[in-house]
Amino acid sequence: MTTPLLHGVCAAMTSPFDDTGEHLDEGRLRDHIESLIDAGVHGLVLCAGTGEFAFLSDDEKDRIISLGCEIVDGRIPVVAQTSAITTTDAIERTRRAADHGAAAAMVLPPYFEGPFERGVLFHYEKLAKAIDIPIVLYNIPVNSGFDIHPDLYRQLMAMENIDYIKDSTGDLIRLQKLIGIGGHVLAGADPLAPYAAMSGAAGWIWGAANVMPHECVQLWNLVQSGDHAGALSLWEQMLPANMFFWENNVDAEYNSAVKTATNMVGRAVGPCRRPVMPMTRQGRVALQTALSTLPVNGTNRDTLVFREWDDEKDWLVQMTHNSGVSRATNSGRAGGK
Picture 1: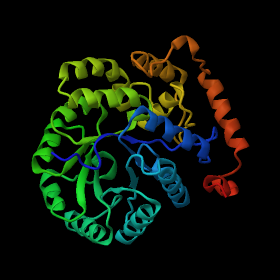
Picture 2 (picture 1 turned 45 degrees about the horizontal axis):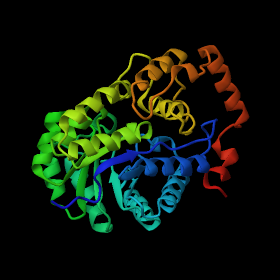
Picture 3 (picture 1 turned 120 degrees about the horizontal axis):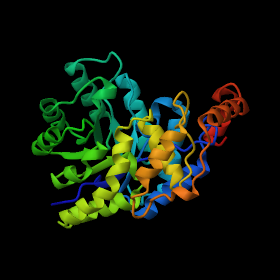
């Protein structure tokens, strides 16, 4: 069987900001990309959900994609998330990403009072005909409000250039149905990672790979070699953090938890952009405990320093004051102009 272009560990990369969260930090972007490639990931996905695309300006998205492709320089495939509400905008964004060097584009169905199935089919059909790089269907109905169910997936897979789906429903039965239909299924639900791979998924688009890329790559290799017992043994060490990211009782959003964890293990990516708040001290202590079981990227509790939440709020207010009124007052920094 031929290995598809997108396979294995495709890291859904965070978008690194400076310490205020208001400006793209290109040095951190470069360092983070290099650290993920050094760990052996098989692909990068830029400006997706974990990359906080909803909080990025169009110029910032273009800069992340163009600079990301430049840094990667063909070493692994780069997938650009290019979703837009209108078909015309989606085509334009995807063409720009392809011009920058993206190997594929990941695209949501039109969201926020978007169309029914007939309009979604129209959207993807026009997009597929307008570009010449593979399209990854992006199915995360809890956020997009639209579900690419198996019957619709079957219709979409008949279109030229639509070769992949990222399914983030967290439903293993659904995942197996999609795999049975054909094409290449990329799993997007962290807690299902080993089971998705054992079921025949082409790979993962995985936010946790920002935190534990070495473990993710090792997990993939163990499954592919047929060592399922070894894979599940490793997964026991990875599971606490992955479950924390997916669901926790300390009021930490997925992106906030992943970015905090990425910083904790030594990859500086800055905070999430407001209004997503920094994790509380209680949350970070719980997260550190979840990370402590990782064999490569584990944390040492004794080396961590936490601010009390009241201090954290004071810090956030000070960073807001220091950063100015808005990004518009410092618009040149994101693009390095």
